[in-house]
Length: 251
Length: 220
Ligand code: HEM
Ligand code: SF4
Ligand code: FES
Image 1 (cartoon, rainbow over the protein chains, first blue to last red):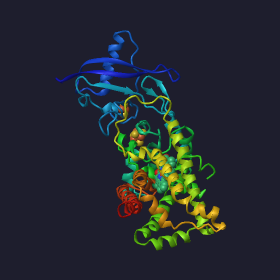
Image 2 (cartoon, helix red, strand yellow; image 1 turned 180 degrees about the vertical axis):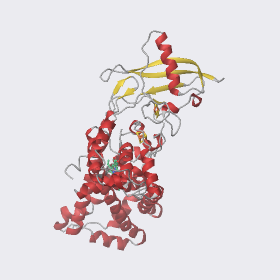
Image 3 (cartoon, chains in turn purple, brown; image 1 turned 180 degrees about the horizontal axis):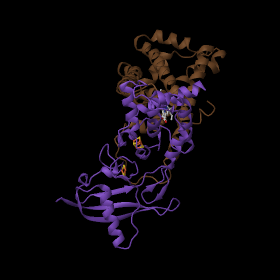
Image 4 (tube, rainbow over the protein chains, first blue to last red; image 1 turned 90 degrees about the horizontal axis):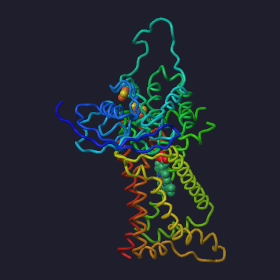
């Protein structure tokens, strides 16, 4: 708790979805390198409030890397300079004294800015909703081993299920494509027998929804995978393509 | 199936199928060229065989359709992808490490188109087209080996062709594995393998095409 740094922050400020935004420059002093990036922004906001200025709006909730609320495009990378972590888990030790840090919201047509650094990611919820239900036999508690699932499949499904829906993949992609997110959501069900029942309908409905919402197509550039805080692999995108093409040709 | 051609994955599927078709054509074309390295007579026989007869013309039309479809969908997708980014662009330059060619497929494709136009003018116009247009007037199309040889003794043309091939190399090192991925034929293990195969395929094609101009430049 001894080392501290001073930073210049270039922060995107925007009053509403239809307002024009601009960058404001702020100075923050004596930031502990042990604090998290969001704590640093909290300090900035306290400073702004004490100066009677409007604090910077940004999304956050759990601050432990599991909810998917935090975002921020920091110095040209979604979730900042660390690999495989969310912004809430990024620490100030990754920055040097005197650095200028540029902080922007996710930018994509399908993710309009709500205010400052907050963007509306309900497009993701719409994609999930389009996926529909999974049939589950209700009744008594099922036997844990009633449906055998090979370990590699279970592992793949779990890796896909690690997606927290943060949107970094869209933010990183030059095409603002939501394919990594969608492929994770399709894979986590398509890999398991319980999810196979509605697999075709689900793949088609979710892909159509993604298109309708204005996300771009995938050029297999792999920026999504490089920036995903949960290391979701693009191999899920190959599976999504397979699921969608099979479903399309079968119907 | 109804809106297959309007959704992203459907359009990308068209890109990959047309792209693979073009790769197969390039391999076929390259093997014809290789004959010229060994025997001018053999090459001239092939040129005559693939002149203005119905099967060569049908093949040319299918090929042209493949090229047009590939470029058409490339343009649609590229515009759609730009629009998806939204109006406000990032101010900080992007620091995510990615494959360069994957982000420049359209520009690389445009270089390929320019090269293609020059190529059609240099060869196709003087060979198949000349035969279609004037063949019936008793016009003798010059031997293929002569047209090729006359062009590639000029260093400028060799240089232009090599730049063209370099653009194609970058296009294909990404294009081949990307096409497999788009079709769904990929997973964690095959991703690295396909990238290696991609580099090999691209390199074989480019060396194969470079041999002829370089041979004429050096050995006349
Ligand atoms: C000999 C010529 C060509 C060959 C063999 C070829 C091959 C390929 C292949 C295999 C792909 C991968 C498809 C996929 O990702 O699923 C591709 C992608 C692409 N090609 Fe070509 N191509 C050629 C010419 C062109 C031309 C003339 C253009 C025109 C501008 C072009 C533009 C593109 C673009 C933009 C993509 C990426 C599409 C995307 O991922 O959104 N290509 N090409
Ligand atoms: S795939 Fe990764 S980057 Fe995309 S929403 Fe899920 S967790 Fe975030
Ligand atoms: S605040 Fe929940 S993941 Fe960052």
